[in-house]
Image (cartoon, rainbow, N blue to C red):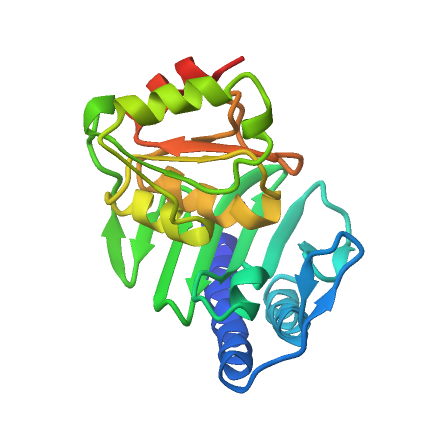
Length: 258
């Protein structure tokens, strides 16, 4: 993707996130009915309207790109430019009145993640990044910490239900035991903290690529390493995350790799 297209795409993603924020904030203030999808996860009109708003902005700016969204699926072919959109990641938090939800917008160019925007309007944070352009938090460039020793590392875990059922659970326990502190910020929040140097490692075993695509670009552009639990880079099929400072990620991967 050439620099001009990249600039247009990043501007569009930020504009789309702002459009979604207006819709989500409206329903946060006024309330919304909750439905259940076939997989028993909640969905609301805020999810659907936010995705529609995001799609309108992205399609106008980059009509040649396909869009794969949480609520309305794939539109177009996914092998060239592909937007990945979760309009309201953290719907369970949204409906339970906790502010740990966000809009996630990423762009893939021939299966490589090249930009991401993570907008959490009620929490009050927006981050964005593009390949080679660094990671930005509220207009300031950010970097991961320089932590190299597990004994000094701050670790955050998200959804680890699957991990709890396999042979890596003991390895995770040992990693937690040897670290400086353990937290469970979850969702967008711990990736934002990692990218700006406030955490050193994030572990999740149960995710969808739409949840973490934008965050993968942000962490990578902040100088971190973002893979699945086996050390592979994120793809459309990714379901787990190991993200951290380079040194801490390497040590954690050695312990957790099957």
